[in-house]
Image 1 (cartoon, one colour):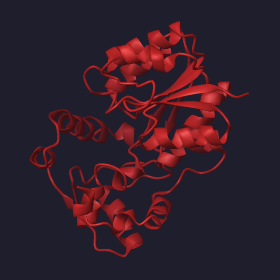
Image 2: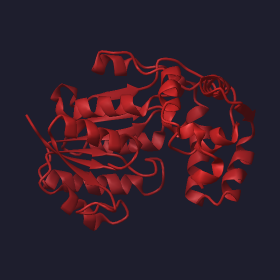
Image 3: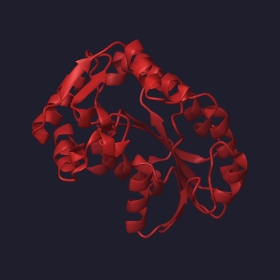
Length: 280
């Protein structure tokens, strides 16, 4: 059966991948973004209904993160609109171990819609498509909490899981936790990237305050500085958030992508061969 599916954040890390997979499966996909038609803007609730109209299902990615102020209200308004528009099901991308995100999960679970919740660990792609790319290109990855062990998850694995549960109703009402197959420290991650690229890349442990000051000096918005401070202090500091899950394998019937596999794949794209200036 083919579905009409709205992918909110359809140009982002996981959303673009979900769009690709749904298109390959023959579903009718509508991208929900500020530049799409109809436009979708989390900051403008009047855009919710036009984007939802005519859709059967939706993948919900809140930008920049469900932990930020205003996320609960936006998720509540969106799910109310989705229910009124007759959507059958929604899939929410959530954060592993984020209390604020769990509050948004409860809103979805109590919305009256069929749903699946997908909790993700930190993305591998943060080092190639996101916040830490410039660190890698500069050859020095300066991050706090060197002792934290993180089960990094690949965005392609997340997209494969989301694309499956969006159309497979056997996962209705379930909460899935998607992680990589093992836990790694920042130092181990950097060593793996250095070995895979053949470049000199070093890990530099710094304090959380130093990291936040560096973000401010780089001109990043206060909301981003707060968010990363929250993620490091509240999420990475909790040992329960460092557990490895088998849900990727249970849903897909294959092992989750190892960080080393991600590095090998990313090296072939050439993204780590840029200069820092090219990314600014």
